[in-house]
Image (cartoon, rainbow, N blue to C red; front, side, top):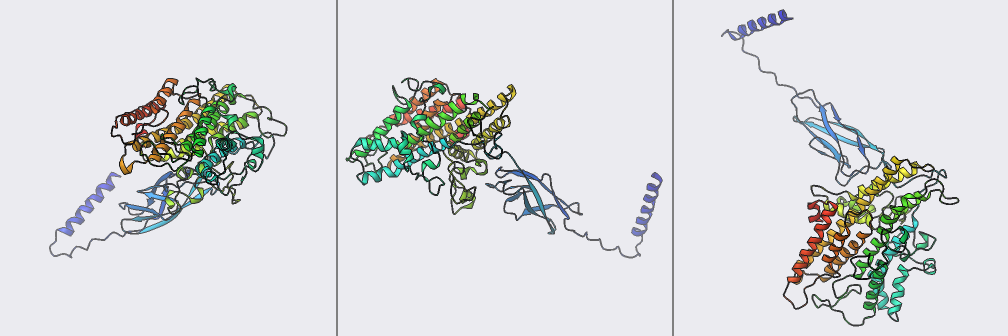
Length: 577
Protein backbone atom coordinates (compact mmCIF):
# COMPACT_ATOMS: atom_id res chain seq x y z
CA UNK A 1 0.00 0.00 0.00
CA UNK A 2 2.87 2.38 0.82
CA UNK A 3 4.60 1.60 -2.53
CA UNK A 4 1.50 2.60 -4.45
CA UNK A 5 1.22 5.89 -2.57
CA UNK A 6 4.90 6.76 -3.26
CA UNK A 7 4.62 5.85 -6.93
CA UNK A 8 1.56 8.01 -7.34
CA UNK A 9 3.31 10.89 -5.66
CA UNK A 10 6.32 10.66 -8.04
CA UNK A 11 4.09 10.52 -11.09
CA UNK A 12 2.13 13.51 -9.88
CA UNK A 13 5.34 15.44 -9.27
CA UNK A 14 6.72 14.72 -12.72
CA UNK A 15 3.46 15.64 -14.33
CA UNK A 16 3.32 18.98 -12.52
CA UNK A 17 6.93 19.74 -13.46
CA UNK A 18 6.29 18.97 -17.10
CA UNK A 19 3.20 21.15 -17.19
CA UNK A 20 4.69 24.07 -15.35
CA UNK A 21 8.32 24.02 -16.62
CA UNK A 22 7.79 24.65 -20.35
CA UNK A 23 7.36 28.19 -21.62
CA UNK A 24 6.25 27.06 -25.04
CA UNK A 25 3.64 24.45 -24.09
CA UNK A 26 -0.14 24.65 -24.38
CA UNK A 27 -1.95 27.14 -22.05
CA UNK A 28 -3.51 25.75 -18.81
CA UNK A 29 -7.16 24.73 -19.11
CA UNK A 30 -9.93 26.85 -17.39
CA UNK A 31 -10.90 25.74 -13.82
CA UNK A 32 -14.05 23.61 -13.63
CA UNK A 33 -17.05 25.34 -11.96
CA UNK A 34 -18.70 23.03 -9.37
CA UNK A 35 -22.27 22.01 -10.21
CA UNK A 36 -24.92 22.63 -7.51
CA UNK A 37 -27.50 19.92 -6.97
CA UNK A 38 -30.79 20.16 -5.11
CA UNK A 39 -31.33 18.53 -1.71
CA UNK A 40 -32.72 15.01 -2.02
CA UNK A 41 -34.30 14.32 1.38
CA UNK A 42 -35.58 15.84 4.61
CA UNK A 43 -35.50 14.00 7.94
CA UNK A 44 -36.44 14.85 11.52
CA UNK A 45 -35.11 13.60 14.84
CA UNK A 46 -38.59 12.88 16.25
CA UNK A 47 -41.89 12.00 14.57
CA UNK A 48 -44.30 12.12 17.53
CA UNK A 49 -46.06 14.82 19.53
CA UNK A 50 -48.17 14.58 22.67
CA UNK A 51 -51.75 15.68 22.28
CA UNK A 52 -52.97 18.80 24.12
CA UNK A 53 -49.47 20.28 24.36
CA UNK A 54 -49.74 23.86 23.13
CA UNK A 55 -46.92 24.98 20.83
CA UNK A 56 -45.09 21.69 21.43
CA UNK A 57 -41.55 21.25 20.11
CA UNK A 58 -41.35 18.22 17.82
CA UNK A 59 -37.82 17.73 16.45
CA UNK A 60 -34.76 18.93 14.57
CA UNK A 61 -34.84 18.96 10.76
CA UNK A 62 -31.91 17.99 8.54
CA UNK A 63 -31.36 17.63 4.80
CA UNK A 64 -29.50 15.27 2.48
CA UNK A 65 -27.51 16.98 -0.29
CA UNK A 66 -24.61 15.90 -2.53
CA UNK A 67 -22.93 19.26 -1.99
CA UNK A 68 -21.28 18.91 1.38
CA UNK A 69 -20.72 22.60 1.93
CA UNK A 70 -24.31 23.72 1.40
CA UNK A 71 -26.35 25.48 4.05
CA UNK A 72 -30.11 25.03 4.28
CA UNK A 73 -33.27 26.96 5.06
CA UNK A 74 -36.36 25.04 6.19
CA UNK A 75 -39.93 26.29 5.76
CA UNK A 76 -43.43 24.87 6.05
CA UNK A 77 -46.77 25.87 4.59
CA UNK A 78 -48.75 23.60 6.94
CA UNK A 79 -51.30 25.44 9.08
CA UNK A 80 -50.43 23.79 12.39
CA UNK A 81 -46.63 23.97 12.24
CA UNK A 82 -43.84 26.50 12.39
CA UNK A 83 -40.11 26.16 11.71
CA UNK A 84 -37.62 28.19 13.71
CA UNK A 85 -34.14 27.69 12.32
CA UNK A 86 -34.16 23.93 11.87
CA UNK A 87 -36.59 23.18 14.72
CA UNK A 88 -40.13 22.05 13.90
CA UNK A 89 -42.89 22.73 16.42
CA UNK A 90 -46.59 23.35 16.61
CA UNK A 91 -47.62 26.96 16.23
CA UNK A 92 -48.19 28.97 19.38
CA UNK A 93 -51.71 28.43 20.75
CA UNK A 94 -52.00 25.28 18.61
CA UNK A 95 -52.13 21.71 19.87
CA UNK A 96 -52.75 18.24 18.52
CA UNK A 97 -55.80 16.19 19.48
CA UNK A 98 -55.63 12.42 19.07
CA UNK A 99 -59.42 12.12 19.03
CA UNK A 100 -59.54 14.42 15.99
CA UNK A 101 -56.48 13.11 14.14
CA UNK A 102 -54.10 10.30 15.02
CA UNK A 103 -51.39 11.79 12.82
CA UNK A 104 -50.54 15.16 11.28
CA UNK A 105 -48.96 16.00 7.92
CA UNK A 106 -46.16 18.57 7.94
CA UNK A 107 -45.10 19.71 4.47
CA UNK A 108 -41.45 20.74 4.75
CA UNK A 109 -39.44 22.54 2.07
CA UNK A 110 -35.66 22.75 2.32
CA UNK A 111 -33.77 25.27 0.18
CA UNK A 112 -29.99 25.25 -0.18
CA UNK A 113 -27.80 28.33 -0.44
CA UNK A 114 -27.80 27.96 -4.21
CA UNK A 115 -31.57 28.42 -4.35
CA UNK A 116 -32.47 24.81 -5.14
CA UNK A 117 -35.17 23.18 -3.05
CA UNK A 118 -36.83 19.91 -2.18
CA UNK A 119 -40.18 19.30 -0.45
CA UNK A 120 -41.35 16.36 1.58
CA UNK A 121 -44.42 15.57 3.67
CA UNK A 122 -43.50 14.33 7.14
CA UNK A 123 -46.03 12.32 9.12
CA UNK A 124 -46.13 13.27 12.80
CA UNK A 125 -47.84 10.70 15.01
CA UNK A 126 -50.04 12.09 17.80
CA UNK A 127 -49.59 10.36 21.15
CA UNK A 128 -52.90 9.46 22.79
CA UNK A 129 -52.83 10.51 26.44
CA UNK A 130 -55.23 10.15 29.34
CA UNK A 131 -56.78 13.56 28.79
CA UNK A 132 -60.54 13.26 29.19
CA UNK A 133 -62.51 12.65 32.37
CA UNK A 134 -64.14 9.54 30.98
CA UNK A 135 -64.05 6.17 32.77
CA UNK A 136 -66.05 3.09 31.85
CA UNK A 137 -67.81 1.21 34.61
CA UNK A 138 -66.16 -1.93 35.98
CA UNK A 139 -69.55 -2.92 37.39
CA UNK A 140 -71.88 -2.60 34.39
CA UNK A 141 -70.13 -3.12 31.06
CA UNK A 142 -70.57 -0.36 28.52
CA UNK A 143 -71.79 2.25 31.00
CA UNK A 144 -69.97 5.28 32.34
CA UNK A 145 -68.89 5.32 35.97
CA UNK A 146 -68.68 9.13 36.04
CA UNK A 147 -71.34 11.32 37.60
CA UNK A 148 -71.45 14.65 39.45
CA UNK A 149 -74.67 16.38 38.43
CA UNK A 150 -75.38 17.69 41.93
CA UNK A 151 -72.15 19.65 41.93
CA UNK A 152 -72.92 21.25 38.58
CA UNK A 153 -76.39 22.13 39.84
CA UNK A 154 -74.77 24.07 42.69
CA UNK A 155 -72.39 25.78 40.29
CA UNK A 156 -75.47 26.76 38.29
CA UNK A 157 -77.18 28.16 41.40
CA UNK A 158 -74.14 30.33 42.19
CA UNK A 159 -73.88 31.53 38.59
CA UNK A 160 -77.60 32.21 38.42
CA UNK A 161 -77.54 34.21 41.67
CA UNK A 162 -74.68 36.35 40.35
CA UNK A 163 -76.51 36.80 37.05
CA UNK A 164 -79.68 37.87 38.85
CA UNK A 165 -77.85 40.33 41.11
CA UNK A 166 -76.04 41.77 38.10
CA UNK A 167 -79.12 42.49 36.00
CA UNK A 168 -82.35 40.84 37.10
CA UNK A 169 -82.54 42.52 40.50
CA UNK A 170 -82.49 46.03 39.06
CA UNK A 171 -85.08 45.00 36.48
CA UNK A 172 -87.36 43.78 39.27
CA UNK A 173 -86.82 47.01 41.21
CA UNK A 174 -87.72 49.04 38.14
CA UNK A 175 -90.85 46.92 37.70
CA UNK A 176 -91.88 47.47 41.35
CA UNK A 177 -91.76 43.73 41.94
CA UNK A 178 -90.99 44.03 45.67
CA UNK A 179 -93.43 45.23 48.27
CA UNK A 180 -90.79 45.37 51.01
CA UNK A 181 -87.30 44.27 52.07
CA UNK A 182 -88.48 40.77 52.97
CA UNK A 183 -89.66 40.25 49.41
CA UNK A 184 -86.13 41.02 48.20
CA UNK A 185 -84.66 38.61 50.75
CA UNK A 186 -87.09 35.90 49.69
CA UNK A 187 -86.00 36.31 46.09
CA UNK A 188 -82.30 36.15 46.96
CA UNK A 189 -82.85 33.12 49.17
CA UNK A 190 -84.55 31.29 46.33
CA UNK A 191 -81.02 30.85 44.94
CA UNK A 192 -79.37 30.07 48.28
CA UNK A 193 -81.99 28.28 50.37
CA UNK A 194 -83.76 26.79 47.38
CA UNK A 195 -86.81 24.80 48.46
CA UNK A 196 -87.87 21.59 46.75
CA UNK A 197 -90.93 23.38 45.41
CA UNK A 198 -88.84 26.21 43.95
CA UNK A 199 -86.29 23.80 42.52
CA UNK A 200 -88.85 21.59 40.83
CA UNK A 201 -91.20 24.33 39.61
CA UNK A 202 -89.61 25.62 36.38
CA UNK A 203 -86.43 27.04 37.93
CA UNK A 204 -84.92 28.40 34.72
CA UNK A 205 -81.22 28.98 34.08
CA UNK A 206 -80.36 32.20 32.26
CA UNK A 207 -76.68 32.79 33.00
CA UNK A 208 -75.67 31.01 29.78
CA UNK A 209 -77.55 30.66 26.51
CA UNK A 210 -77.97 27.60 24.30
CA UNK A 211 -77.50 25.08 27.07
CA UNK A 212 -78.75 21.53 27.10
CA UNK A 213 -80.28 22.26 30.50
CA UNK A 214 -82.62 25.29 30.37
CA UNK A 215 -84.03 24.31 33.78
CA UNK A 216 -82.07 23.24 36.82
CA UNK A 217 -83.99 19.97 37.03
CA UNK A 218 -82.43 19.11 33.66
CA UNK A 219 -79.09 18.96 35.47
CA UNK A 220 -80.19 17.06 38.56
CA UNK A 221 -83.73 15.85 39.12
CA UNK A 222 -83.35 15.74 42.92
CA UNK A 223 -83.52 19.13 44.66
CA UNK A 224 -80.23 20.84 45.46
CA UNK A 225 -79.44 23.98 47.44
CA UNK A 226 -76.39 25.99 48.44
CA UNK A 227 -77.12 26.45 52.13
CA UNK A 228 -77.05 22.71 52.72
CA UNK A 229 -73.46 22.46 51.47
CA UNK A 230 -71.92 25.68 52.78
CA UNK A 231 -68.91 25.22 55.06
CA UNK A 232 -70.06 24.20 58.53
CA UNK A 233 -73.27 22.46 57.57
CA UNK A 234 -71.62 19.02 57.48
CA UNK A 235 -69.48 19.25 60.62
CA UNK A 236 -68.52 15.57 60.49
CA UNK A 237 -66.31 16.18 57.48
CA UNK A 238 -65.08 19.69 58.23
CA UNK A 239 -61.63 20.36 59.66
CA UNK A 240 -63.13 22.96 62.02
CA UNK A 241 -66.55 23.77 63.41
CA UNK A 242 -67.23 26.77 61.23
CA UNK A 243 -70.50 27.44 63.09
CA UNK A 244 -69.02 28.05 66.56
CA UNK A 245 -68.59 31.79 66.05
CA UNK A 246 -64.80 31.77 66.45
CA UNK A 247 -63.33 29.28 63.95
CA UNK A 248 -64.42 31.25 60.88
CA UNK A 249 -61.86 34.05 60.58
CA UNK A 250 -61.67 37.21 58.53
CA UNK A 251 -65.31 38.31 58.33
CA UNK A 252 -65.74 39.95 61.72
CA UNK A 253 -66.69 38.76 65.19
CA UNK A 254 -69.15 35.91 65.71
CA UNK A 255 -69.61 35.27 62.02
CA UNK A 256 -70.18 31.92 60.35
CA UNK A 257 -70.10 31.27 56.60
CA UNK A 258 -73.89 31.15 56.51
CA UNK A 259 -74.47 34.28 58.58
CA UNK A 260 -72.00 36.15 56.36
CA UNK A 261 -74.14 35.33 53.32
CA UNK A 262 -77.17 36.58 55.24
CA UNK A 263 -75.34 39.80 56.10
CA UNK A 264 -74.58 40.40 52.43
CA UNK A 265 -78.19 39.63 51.51
CA UNK A 266 -79.41 42.14 54.08
CA UNK A 267 -77.16 44.87 52.72
CA UNK A 268 -78.34 44.13 49.20
CA UNK A 269 -81.99 44.16 50.22
CA UNK A 270 -81.50 47.48 52.02
CA UNK A 271 -80.03 48.96 48.85
CA UNK A 272 -82.89 47.57 46.78
CA UNK A 273 -85.60 49.27 48.82
CA UNK A 274 -83.67 52.51 49.43
CA UNK A 275 -85.39 55.18 47.38
CA UNK A 276 -82.67 57.73 48.11
CA UNK A 277 -79.72 58.46 45.89
CA UNK A 278 -76.70 56.76 47.45
CA UNK A 279 -73.34 58.56 47.19
CA UNK A 280 -69.99 56.83 47.38
CA UNK A 281 -67.66 57.90 50.18
CA UNK A 282 -64.68 58.59 47.92
CA UNK A 283 -66.04 60.85 45.16
CA UNK A 284 -69.50 61.74 46.48
CA UNK A 285 -70.90 60.55 43.15
CA UNK A 286 -74.25 58.77 42.76
CA UNK A 287 -74.00 54.98 42.83
CA UNK A 288 -75.85 53.49 39.87
CA UNK A 289 -75.57 49.78 40.70
CA UNK A 290 -77.76 48.33 43.43
CA UNK A 291 -75.07 45.85 44.48
CA UNK A 292 -72.35 48.48 45.03
CA UNK A 293 -72.21 49.87 48.57
CA UNK A 294 -71.17 53.36 49.63
CA UNK A 295 -68.16 52.00 51.57
CA UNK A 296 -66.27 50.55 48.60
CA UNK A 297 -67.66 47.02 48.59
CA UNK A 298 -69.43 45.14 45.81
CA UNK A 299 -72.04 42.63 46.99
CA UNK A 300 -72.31 40.80 43.70
CA UNK A 301 -68.61 39.98 43.77
CA UNK A 302 -68.53 39.21 47.49
CA UNK A 303 -71.44 36.78 47.24
CA UNK A 304 -70.32 35.02 44.08
CA UNK A 305 -66.68 34.60 45.10
CA UNK A 306 -67.43 33.64 48.70
CA UNK A 307 -70.01 31.05 47.67
CA UNK A 308 -67.57 29.56 45.17
CA UNK A 309 -65.14 29.15 48.06
CA UNK A 310 -67.46 28.24 50.94
CA UNK A 311 -69.43 25.72 48.87
CA UNK A 312 -67.39 24.39 45.95
CA UNK A 313 -63.83 24.81 47.30
CA UNK A 314 -64.77 23.75 50.81
CA UNK A 315 -66.71 20.72 49.65
CA UNK A 316 -64.00 19.77 47.18
CA UNK A 317 -60.92 20.05 49.38
CA UNK A 318 -62.32 19.40 52.86
CA UNK A 319 -64.86 16.72 52.05
CA UNK A 320 -64.70 14.69 48.86
CA UNK A 321 -60.92 14.90 48.43
CA UNK A 322 -60.25 14.47 52.14
CA UNK A 323 -62.33 12.02 54.20
CA UNK A 324 -64.11 11.12 51.00
CA UNK A 325 -61.12 9.08 49.86
CA UNK A 326 -61.67 6.57 52.66
CA UNK A 327 -65.04 5.31 51.43
CA UNK A 328 -65.86 2.02 49.70
CA UNK A 329 -64.45 1.08 46.30
CA UNK A 330 -65.54 -2.56 46.41
CA UNK A 331 -69.28 -2.69 45.82
CA UNK A 332 -71.75 -0.70 43.74
CA UNK A 333 -72.92 2.34 45.70
CA UNK A 334 -76.50 1.22 45.24
CA UNK A 335 -78.76 -1.15 43.41
CA UNK A 336 -78.30 -0.73 39.68
CA UNK A 337 -75.51 1.83 40.08
CA UNK A 338 -72.55 1.64 37.71
CA UNK A 339 -70.04 3.15 40.13
CA UNK A 340 -68.68 2.69 43.64
CA UNK A 341 -69.04 5.18 46.47
CA UNK A 342 -65.39 6.18 46.07
CA UNK A 343 -65.73 6.72 42.33
CA UNK A 344 -68.78 8.89 42.86
CA UNK A 345 -67.23 10.82 45.74
CA UNK A 346 -64.11 11.61 43.77
CA UNK A 347 -66.24 12.67 40.80
CA UNK A 348 -68.04 15.09 43.10
CA UNK A 349 -64.70 16.66 44.02
CA UNK A 350 -63.92 17.02 40.32
CA UNK A 351 -67.34 18.51 39.69
CA UNK A 352 -66.72 21.22 42.25
CA UNK A 353 -63.49 22.19 40.45
CA UNK A 354 -65.74 22.97 37.49
CA UNK A 355 -63.68 21.78 34.51
CA UNK A 356 -65.16 20.48 31.26
CA UNK A 357 -64.49 16.76 30.71
CA UNK A 358 -61.97 17.56 27.94
CA UNK A 359 -60.40 20.47 29.82
CA UNK A 360 -56.91 19.68 28.51
CA UNK A 361 -58.07 20.13 24.92
CA UNK A 362 -58.65 23.84 25.58
CA UNK A 363 -55.98 26.52 25.59
CA UNK A 364 -55.84 28.77 28.64
CA UNK A 365 -57.35 31.67 26.71
CA UNK A 366 -60.20 29.43 25.61
CA UNK A 367 -60.89 28.22 29.15
CA UNK A 368 -60.80 31.79 30.41
CA UNK A 369 -63.25 32.97 27.73
CA UNK A 370 -60.68 35.40 26.32
CA UNK A 371 -61.06 34.47 22.65
CA UNK A 372 -61.74 37.41 20.34
CA UNK A 373 -63.99 36.56 17.42
CA UNK A 374 -61.96 38.73 15.04
CA UNK A 375 -58.54 37.48 16.18
CA UNK A 376 -57.77 33.82 15.52
CA UNK A 377 -54.48 34.09 17.40
CA UNK A 378 -56.42 34.28 20.67
CA UNK A 379 -57.98 30.85 20.16
CA UNK A 380 -60.90 29.06 18.58
CA UNK A 381 -64.13 31.03 18.73
CA UNK A 382 -66.22 27.90 19.24
CA UNK A 383 -64.10 26.92 22.27
CA UNK A 384 -64.51 30.20 24.13
CA UNK A 385 -65.20 28.96 27.65
CA UNK A 386 -67.30 26.10 26.31
CA UNK A 387 -67.48 23.77 23.33
CA UNK A 388 -70.20 21.67 21.75
CA UNK A 389 -68.10 18.51 21.88
CA UNK A 390 -70.90 16.07 21.09
CA UNK A 391 -72.17 18.18 18.18
CA UNK A 392 -75.79 18.48 19.30
CA UNK A 393 -75.80 22.30 18.92
CA UNK A 394 -76.22 22.76 22.69
CA UNK A 395 -73.79 23.21 25.57
CA UNK A 396 -74.00 20.50 28.22
CA UNK A 397 -73.37 22.13 31.60
CA UNK A 398 -72.27 18.78 33.04
CA UNK A 399 -69.46 18.19 30.57
CA UNK A 400 -68.93 20.94 27.96
CA UNK A 401 -68.67 24.16 29.99
CA UNK A 402 -65.86 25.43 32.22
CA UNK A 403 -67.04 26.82 35.54
CA UNK A 404 -65.70 28.18 38.82
CA UNK A 405 -62.11 27.60 39.86
CA UNK A 406 -61.22 25.88 36.60
CA UNK A 407 -61.57 29.25 34.88
CA UNK A 408 -59.52 31.14 37.48
CA UNK A 409 -56.68 28.63 37.05
CA UNK A 410 -56.49 29.41 33.34
CA UNK A 411 -56.56 33.17 33.90
CA UNK A 412 -53.58 32.98 36.22
CA UNK A 413 -51.68 30.76 33.80
CA UNK A 414 -52.23 33.41 31.14
CA UNK A 415 -50.97 36.06 33.56
CA UNK A 416 -47.65 34.28 34.04
CA UNK A 417 -47.22 32.89 30.51
CA UNK A 418 -44.53 35.37 29.44
CA UNK A 419 -42.55 35.16 32.68
CA UNK A 420 -39.42 33.11 33.29
CA UNK A 421 -41.27 30.50 35.38
CA UNK A 422 -44.84 30.38 34.08
CA UNK A 423 -47.46 28.42 35.97
CA UNK A 424 -49.56 25.62 34.53
CA UNK A 425 -52.28 25.24 37.14
CA UNK A 426 -54.75 23.94 34.57
CA UNK A 427 -52.53 21.08 33.49
CA UNK A 428 -51.30 20.31 37.00
CA UNK A 429 -54.81 20.04 38.42
CA UNK A 430 -56.40 18.14 35.54
CA UNK A 431 -53.62 15.62 35.08
CA UNK A 432 -53.72 14.84 38.79
CA UNK A 433 -57.52 14.49 38.72
CA UNK A 434 -57.21 12.05 35.82
CA UNK A 435 -54.36 10.05 37.36
CA UNK A 436 -56.20 9.68 40.67
CA UNK A 437 -59.48 8.70 39.02
CA UNK A 438 -57.66 6.07 36.95
CA UNK A 439 -56.18 4.55 40.10
CA UNK A 440 -59.68 4.32 41.55
CA UNK A 441 -61.21 2.93 38.36
CA UNK A 442 -58.44 0.37 37.84
CA UNK A 443 -58.95 -1.04 41.33
CA UNK A 444 -62.73 -1.27 41.61
CA UNK A 445 -63.63 -4.42 43.52
CA UNK A 446 -60.28 -4.77 45.27
CA UNK A 447 -58.74 -3.42 48.46
CA UNK A 448 -56.06 -0.82 47.86
CA UNK A 449 -52.51 -1.82 48.69
CA UNK A 450 -50.42 0.59 50.75
CA UNK A 451 -48.61 1.64 47.57
CA UNK A 452 -51.89 2.31 45.73
CA UNK A 453 -53.21 4.34 48.65
CA UNK A 454 -50.04 6.42 48.67
CA UNK A 455 -50.25 6.94 44.91
CA UNK A 456 -53.88 8.06 45.19
CA UNK A 457 -53.15 10.45 48.05
CA UNK A 458 -50.18 11.88 46.16
CA UNK A 459 -52.39 12.74 43.20
CA UNK A 460 -55.01 14.18 45.56
CA UNK A 461 -52.30 16.39 47.05
CA UNK A 462 -51.31 17.51 43.55
CA UNK A 463 -54.92 18.44 42.79
CA UNK A 464 -55.39 20.43 45.97
CA UNK A 465 -52.02 22.13 45.65
CA UNK A 466 -52.75 23.35 42.12
CA UNK A 467 -56.30 24.34 43.09
CA UNK A 468 -55.17 26.36 46.11
CA UNK A 469 -52.34 28.07 44.26
CA UNK A 470 -54.72 29.07 41.46
CA UNK A 471 -57.04 30.71 43.99
CA UNK A 472 -54.21 32.33 45.96
CA UNK A 473 -52.80 33.66 42.69
CA UNK A 474 -56.24 35.08 41.96
CA UNK A 475 -56.25 36.85 45.33
CA UNK A 476 -52.82 38.25 44.49
CA UNK A 477 -54.10 39.38 41.09
CA UNK A 478 -56.81 41.43 42.79
CA UNK A 479 -54.37 42.77 45.38
CA UNK A 480 -52.30 44.11 42.50
CA UNK A 481 -55.37 45.55 40.78
CA UNK A 482 -56.59 47.19 43.98
CA UNK A 483 -53.22 48.72 44.81
CA UNK A 484 -53.14 50.25 41.33
CA UNK A 485 -56.75 51.47 41.69
CA UNK A 486 -56.08 53.19 45.02
CA UNK A 487 -52.96 54.92 43.71
CA UNK A 488 -54.98 56.73 41.06
CA UNK A 489 -56.61 60.12 41.46
CA UNK A 490 -58.71 62.59 39.55
CA UNK A 491 -60.34 61.36 36.37
CA UNK A 492 -58.29 58.14 36.47
CA UNK A 493 -59.84 57.07 39.77
CA UNK A 494 -62.69 54.58 39.33
CA UNK A 495 -64.77 53.89 42.42
CA UNK A 496 -66.56 50.89 40.94
CA UNK A 497 -63.24 49.26 40.09
CA UNK A 498 -62.04 49.75 43.66
CA UNK A 499 -65.21 48.12 45.00
CA UNK A 500 -65.10 45.29 42.48
CA UNK A 501 -61.45 44.40 42.96
CA UNK A 502 -61.54 44.65 46.77
CA UNK A 503 -64.60 42.40 46.91
CA UNK A 504 -63.16 39.79 44.56
CA UNK A 505 -59.96 39.76 46.60
CA UNK A 506 -61.82 39.41 49.90
CA UNK A 507 -64.38 36.88 48.71
CA UNK A 508 -61.77 34.49 47.35
CA UNK A 509 -59.37 35.02 50.25
CA UNK A 510 -61.96 34.20 52.91
CA UNK A 511 -62.29 30.74 51.42
CA UNK A 512 -58.62 29.77 51.63
CA UNK A 513 -59.15 28.75 55.27
CA UNK A 514 -61.36 25.82 54.24
CA UNK A 515 -58.53 23.75 52.73
CA UNK A 516 -57.22 21.24 55.32
CA UNK A 517 -54.00 20.73 53.34
CA UNK A 518 -53.03 24.39 53.07
CA UNK A 519 -49.51 25.39 54.13
CA UNK A 520 -50.95 28.78 55.12
CA UNK A 521 -51.00 28.74 58.93
CA UNK A 522 -53.94 30.02 60.96
CA UNK A 523 -51.80 32.93 62.16
CA UNK A 524 -50.78 33.85 58.61
CA UNK A 525 -54.38 33.66 57.44
CA UNK A 526 -55.57 35.94 60.24
CA UNK A 527 -52.80 38.44 59.48
CA UNK A 528 -53.76 38.54 55.81
CA UNK A 529 -57.29 39.57 56.73
CA UNK A 530 -56.09 42.15 59.23
CA UNK A 531 -54.31 43.76 56.30
CA UNK A 532 -57.40 43.48 54.07
CA UNK A 533 -59.91 44.72 56.64
CA UNK A 534 -63.67 44.54 56.17
CA UNK A 535 -63.68 47.22 53.48
CA UNK A 536 -61.08 49.16 51.51
CA UNK A 537 -59.49 52.27 52.96
CA UNK A 538 -60.76 55.15 50.84
CA UNK A 539 -59.71 58.76 50.61
CA UNK A 540 -62.82 60.51 52.00
CA UNK A 541 -64.45 63.00 49.69
CA UNK A 542 -62.96 66.44 50.21
CA UNK A 543 -59.85 65.20 52.03
CA UNK A 544 -56.31 65.61 50.70
CA UNK A 545 -54.63 63.50 53.38
CA UNK A 546 -53.59 60.24 51.69
CA UNK A 547 -51.71 58.87 54.69
CA UNK A 548 -54.25 56.16 55.52
CA UNK A 549 -54.62 55.09 51.89
CA UNK A 550 -50.85 54.94 51.43
CA UNK A 551 -50.53 52.79 54.55
CA UNK A 552 -53.30 50.50 53.30
CA UNK A 553 -51.58 50.05 49.94
CA UNK A 554 -48.46 48.97 51.85
CA UNK A 555 -50.53 46.60 54.00
CA UNK A 556 -51.92 44.95 50.88
CA UNK A 557 -48.36 44.29 49.75
CA UNK A 558 -47.64 42.67 53.13
CA UNK A 559 -50.61 40.34 52.67
CA UNK A 560 -49.35 39.48 49.20
CA UNK A 561 -45.91 38.67 50.61
CA UNK A 562 -47.44 36.27 53.15
CA UNK A 563 -49.22 34.35 50.40
CA UNK A 564 -46.11 34.26 48.24
CA UNK A 565 -43.89 32.86 50.98
CA UNK A 566 -46.44 30.40 52.37
CA UNK A 567 -47.12 28.85 48.97
CA UNK A 568 -43.65 29.24 47.45
CA UNK A 569 -44.88 31.33 44.53
CA UNK A 570 -42.48 32.84 42.01
CA UNK A 571 -41.75 36.50 42.78
CA UNK A 572 -41.96 37.57 39.14
CA UNK A 573 -45.35 35.91 38.73
CA UNK A 574 -46.61 37.49 41.94
CA UNK A 575 -45.56 40.94 40.80
CA UNK A 576 -47.23 40.56 37.40
CA UNK A 577 -50.47 38.71 38.14
